[in-house]
Image 1 (cartoon, one colour):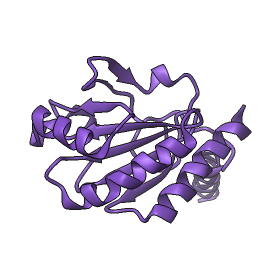
Image 2 (cartoon, rainbow, N blue to C red):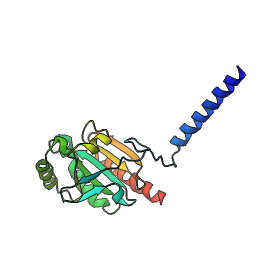
Image 3 (cartoon, rainbow, N blue to C red):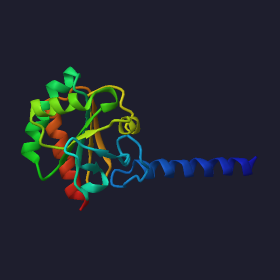
Image 4 (cartoon, rainbow, N blue to C red):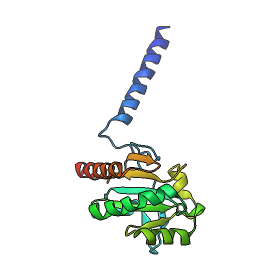
Length: 179
C-alpha cells in the first residue's frame, strides 16, 4: 500500500508541475492551437493583391487576424474600425483580413474591401483551411497574436472600437517586452 501511495503522490506532483509550466505567463507554449496562450496555427494564403501571406513572413511583428465575409452584417459594422486602427498603428501591427472565401466569393470580398478602403492584406481562405485551423464558428472572429506567434486574445462577434484598440495596444506592448 505504501508503494502505491508514493506512486500516486509522484504522479500528482508531476501533473501539477506540467500544468504550472503550461500556465506560466512568461513562458511561450510551442503547441499550435487556436487558443489563448498557445502558438497561432500557421497558414499561407493568397491575397486579393496577388501576394501570398503567412504568419512566418511577419518576422516578429504582432498581427490582428480578422475572419469575416462580405455578407456578414456585424463584419460591415466592424470594418471601418479596423481601417481606422490600422492607419493609426500601421508599422506597429499587421492586420490580416481573412475572408471566408469557401463560404463567400472573391468578387464579394473584393467589393467589400474596396467599399471600406482596406489597405491591409485581404487573404482568401478558399478551401477553408485557415478557418478550420482557427475553429471559426461565427464571424467576425478576431485573434490578437504577439510577435512570438502567441495568441493573446480572441474576440468572437462584433468588437467595440475600444476593445479592438485596447487589444491592439496589448499585442504591440507584449511584442516589445518579448524583444
